[in-house]
Image 1 (tube, rainbow, N blue to C red):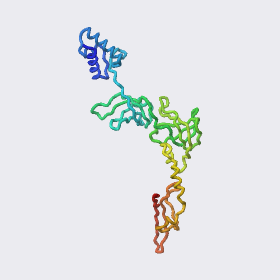
Image 2 (image 1 turned 135 degrees about the vertical axis):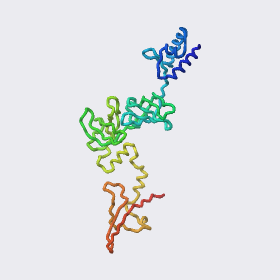
Image 3 (image 1 turned 90 degrees about the vertical axis):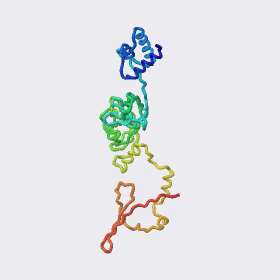
Image 4 (image 1 turned 90 degrees about the horizontal axis):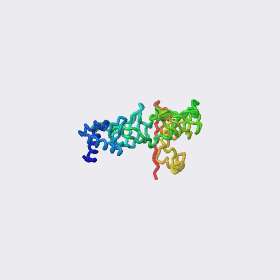
Length: 303
């Protein structure tokens, strides 16, 4: 029997039983080898295959197939119970990640995953994997209201996290950055992510104060700053807006009925930034009431 033929027989058998280990005696029986020379030949070939890293041995000198590990990259989505899934191909099932194998990744992180159990053929159950590296962090900054504290050395307070994806985490602020006052909404740059010692703790530095938690529209501003949405108009837009007069021109009045003498009352709240409807009412000579409902007719500028 040639070396190549024997290696092929051993690999074929072990590939059919990839999760089991075998002693030399067991392999001899399974492969139906007989005689002392066949046993010696098998031992030599197994040693050769071990050097090639085709098989490995355990503490009992049992042999097992070395399976190729497959690593893929994808986006992690965690569950409050600790486990998660990694989406790496829209046409394939997500990879299940056991709580012990998440490497404390946070939802949205780009991660490298090693497949430790492939998907079962004919089953809708996806593969199982373990995260072996964080490729890119999803959260590099977090926006929220600051609360001061003196509970721990170097920590000056905490930031309330509003993002539901981070609901199980706490964000602490260190003394290295700004020292906000209570109720100020700050942009915190993350400097330390969860780990084995602090699995639900995030640490950061206060980099910018964007206002007070009680300021009108602060809820919207927090979302804007959290997701790096542009918060300033381009210069050409503001220049064009500044050229619009703050009074109604005669040209604008053309073809319209002038009712600017009516004492309109807006029905928007005091904090509203979009005053686009109003009402007015008065008694008619016959005793009935006139109710006027006024809706802004905003027309786009045409060039």
